[in-house]
Image (cartoon, rainbow, N blue to C red; front, top):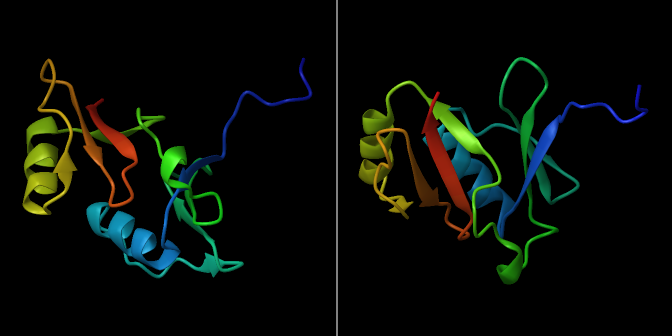
Length: 118
């Protein structure tokens, strides 16, 4: 048995402005943007009931450090409604819906994210 657990508790995303990023992610996730800004550069947004959090971090942001490929995906039950929702929010869509299953988009800082029907 390893001393390192096979469980992740956080996904870090480099963002330019922590307040703007918190508000944007909360808006697309239909969450109230009242999550605390920690140490002036971190914001932890709970992803699920198992302790996984999306951690927005403005201290690690560099233009060349943004995700050029998705490091994870957001789940959806309805890929078409999710696509339409982000389109209505004027989110930059990187791909169309692929194989009826997933698509990519960019956050305001240029990080490529994915939505996947799961």
